[in-house]
Length: 428
Image (cartoon, rainbow, N blue to C red; front, side, top):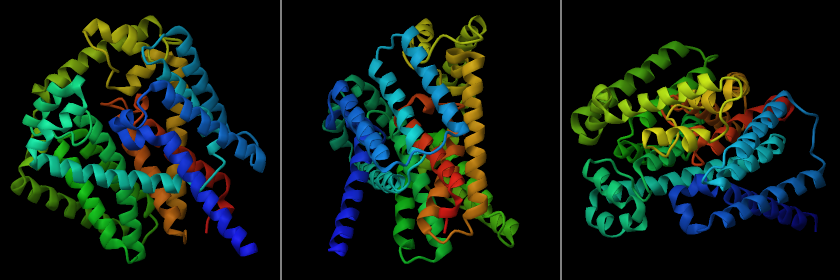
């Protein structure tokens, strides 16, 4: 009976993790396809609320609440910033602000739980493999893409056709930037699994290598230079920090970098899509997207100087400032937008979170990546540090802090190391 109860408990735990991952992170996992799975915004919000309430009830029932931490205070202050923004800025996607606040509440308590994030990484990896395969297939099957896929997104159909003609492949998503974000998420997970499999000489190393290469090819086909560059820098940097204690560390790092350069050169010479992506780095001065971003940044900076203490409110940029440039999106620089929307006060709060989180992630990876026995823990530590580096780099040219495809995964990468930092006795 005890054994049966044990099996039943395991099944319930696994089922709950699936409910939590898909009920709260489905937009991050499904990207633009989420609108077909859950077509109405209010229904999406209702699902999120239900899952968070169930999660809080489980925590209270199990009495897993612990004493407040410094980062709890920062999350509460971030929540207050978003709530203040909701009061002063009536965003046209009001439910996006509700969802953001809901995530902050969830992360405040999820910092004291473990287990669910391992499943989240596996699901993100699986979704990334599917997106990558579809990207490769549709890159060669133009007929299916033009006759079927683009019709899923009538509002962006003309944009998708133009991008396809320019060899910037969106796959099954609504934009090549969306595809780039989804595949960037997945390739960092794939890198963590591959690195751990190689170091531990695990039997599934071939599968992990195949998954990594598949996602890499898909990411290259998107022609997103920022995602390629920042994920590469993040993965190598995190691995360097995590293995710093290893003997002959410098020579191994040099060999890895030399090998990576050789692969890039070979790909540039023989793969047109890679050549196109690399060429875009040298054409940035003539890129109209870059030029328009200078305008966005200038408008945000002007708004900050007028409201330097508290800012204009969360999501205020796209509602009040962007229309001045005939634009309806975010600033494409998180740091400038934070100054604009939250002022010096809010920016300081986020800056403490950014720095504190990455310091803890780096410290935990440095201490335990080589020493820990659990491959799952090694994957988590390497992923968390890699993703934070990638995210903070991408904040310079993108909007990841405001994009539901990425900010939930970023906060996950922050709270997991925090959990183990406070519970180092659980590390094996």
